[in-house]
Length: 148
Image (cartoon, rainbow, N blue to C red; front, side, top):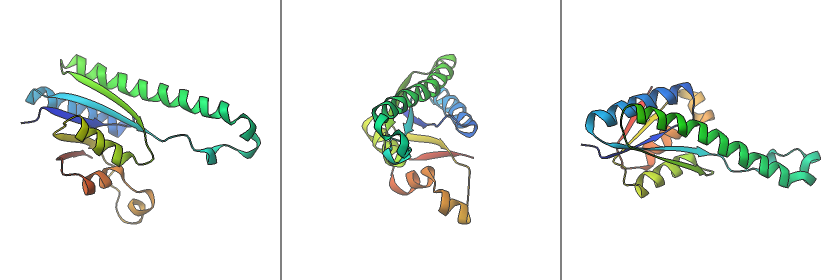
């Protein structure tokens, strides 16, 4: 059925439940998983004007924070996979468009299912907040399991 399941996570409580579901599914069907965390790249406009002379420090701090945050999340997924005896690869990417990074990684890694969480927002909140999950759904041909 499935051989390689991409599990997209941001470390939120909802994403953790989607991870648990994805790991259980992978174990059930004998698939491996590829866990992905997509972080926003450094944005110079987020640096206060008074800190611009130390921008290299802000860039370094952002890079370190991003690396630590992703490592913590991916370590949690790897631990869950190991406990279930499911092979697991991890990918951490910085990208302006998380949905595109998820789709690109799924294609590059030969994933045949994407598992991700969704808050299920609708109406104006969905329009204002956007949805990575909705964008993945709209732009990929790979099957997606959405965990609410």
